[in-house]
Image (cartoon, rainbow, N blue to C red; front, side, top):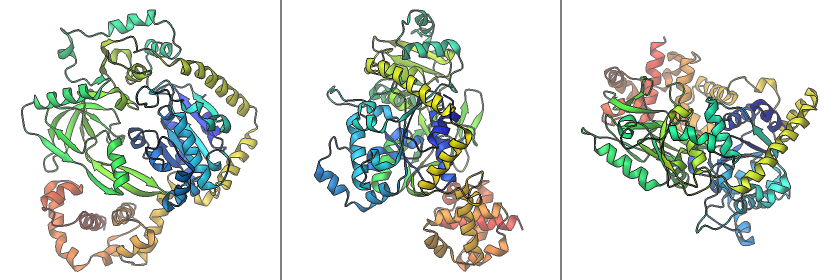
Length: 561
């Protein structure tokens, strides 16, 4: 099934299990669906099974979203108590679409608990209280986390799975690996085929004591255990001579949500870097030229800001500035953390590599201990030539026998769904799409739907109207229910779009700002940047970030006069 075919099915409001091999485009498809929903005025609940997966999709863990936390079971008392938690009731009552990513790591008991919570709060007996549920993941990858080797059911073995009967959309495109030999190897693992022919290719990728460390000096290594990763990264960093630059993570919002963000963020709270350190980007920023998984070496630090500059494998130099990880709900940011999106990358665990795309990596698979670990590790790299192996064990290429059986059914169900929709007339499908949007409280009004990001355009327009009414910034923030930083961000964008001029915003310049403007302007010029952090540091924190942001807007407006 193609991504567009899967989108067509999801837009009908059907419950869906979106799956496919690594690199098939599951995340891209979900992002496209989320954009479609928002374009029509519907805000989906975006969740994932782990904190790491949640940060990749700008969501929160399903455990946090549903209120089950670390519970292993729910009593009638627990469910009754949850109905008294106002924010939880409000959150679930208004949700029309629930997305759960990395479903392979959620066990059947947990999925049934989430279903029970949703049904109780929504007071409806349909699965998940009647909302559309989109489950995303690949069961050949990491399984549910268990303690004491207890046996737990997979998500597809949950009671609610058989009741809701999700349509299976099995993506068959491949956007990560183009190496046919490598694709054949990965497919053989998924089908549990004899590996004899493929072992020849793997043995050619083996490294030895003699050639490994010169060849792989600055290459990311994947290990099964955290201890190996921490040891190698620490030793490698402190073997480099020279000063250390430390970057501290900043946070805003609910302590619980911030803790969840920190747990899922691949960048540490305290990031120590030196020139010569091997690093990996932990966030996507295509405008700046890097994605989650881009690797490189620190070559220097930017004067003034001290932001690290990395050189990638292709020789390109990139300045890595701080970025935000956030949890959004109803289009509002509930919590955020800010850090330079890097981590030391001499080594990383297989678990934390899930979701990454690497040009090359050295893998020590001799201590793989669970189904799917070896497959996840191998599928991180794009080509066979980028794969280097220190060794493997008997468990490395094994997949769970239950998954092998179920995957046959998933393929069959996907083909059936594809065939069923192919028989429908275009007008029938369009009507199904329209009915779902309207029944979910969305809009089909063309005036309210833009081809870009309508909610951004609408929110800018609302801020523009209030500025033109010459309302104080505090009043605008209060009326719009936005933080001041967001209002100022709107202000700067409206100036760049030439919808506001210096004359129209001059009323915002109070005597204190007017007095400070020359010094702030000089600081931006001296630091040779438009970024706030270098100017904040240059002025020794004399002005708040909001004051600097407003000053930057005024300076910009003056320049456009």
